[in-house]
Image (cartoon, rainbow, N blue to C red; front, side, top):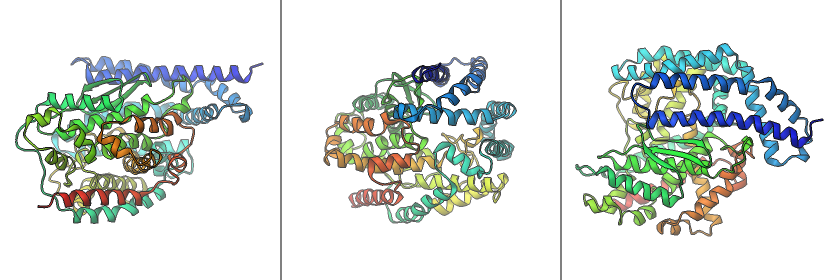
Length: 501
């Protein structure tokens, strides 16, 4: 007879083996972005496809299904909270995999291989007509997937819930309703001088040195490399987590803040408890993961106290092309732009709103794929006052907006959720740490904040099913868009006043 302990051991072993294959795929992903030789991409494609096929078979195996069915019959009172959560999470993932037909899986895998190349060509040639069929195909796939996995569920609710459990069109509409007009109004009120950096280059090595110093002080223990797009790769967390950034001579803001942002993600992964097979110890959600990166990038890294501490001894200060006060104003400038990843705190949510409204229209049928460019351009003008001159700058823009070409819908709203969560967590941390958080930041002391996050968020994993539940426990309230708006209004009103002559 199979005992409870032996059954849980068997389940953890199978889930641990699946995690191990995932770790190898993550390592290949990091290698592809950082060290893969030119000309090796076809070989890498074959390697990834073989591993993906193996992973699918492991996730879809009868042995795993049988083990999960028996585990669900165990008396819950005899299990730890994390074991119960692991059974819940594993069964949810297994149910989804077995419902996804192999033909649909192959269709998804095939389109993933060709879509990025099509997107790159469309951008290069400024031809949205090349990309439109790919987006149409992805929407068809996601609708079919929703019908198979969650019959009767609204397809866009399905993809929203996929990235942030408990999300729906109704909830996202309410969230954006509460921030849209206040942010547009705040943007209209803020009149800042154009604090771009002087017309000289900042050497990249001092940028890297400063970034390395900052992330070391934050407590990151891992690799920092250069790549085209900044990223965090949790190869085998918590022991092997790697990050990259991109440093640009005439844009020190990008590389330094990206390094802080990715370190926030990495600290979440490094703060996990190492228990192979207990998959409930994984990060809670996409929105919560984004909250950790934005907590450090915006709540800490874009604070006056942070730069009062780091600027004087930095190589950038010694370069002598800008004052510390000027550099802080440059970092926090509010300036509507075409590119989401280069946007400031106030305009960033409006970039996300544009993408959300377009996605919603595509899924409910009120918007056709061919209308994307014109609707995108009109909303950029309406919300941000920015004129888009061509599709490569607009709906085909570069940077990190490759989501739609890879069939990733419902993801964009998690960036705003993360910003809202970050505000709430920062306030709760300050409350629990005796109101000393800003004083600690001014002294470069990040351990109290890091350990608070580790205790309240990182080590908790998926003990709670949704971010809303975790926020309620940790902060005393659910998601609070109004608090987010109040935070931005106060912060940028003060910055705006300080920049007046």
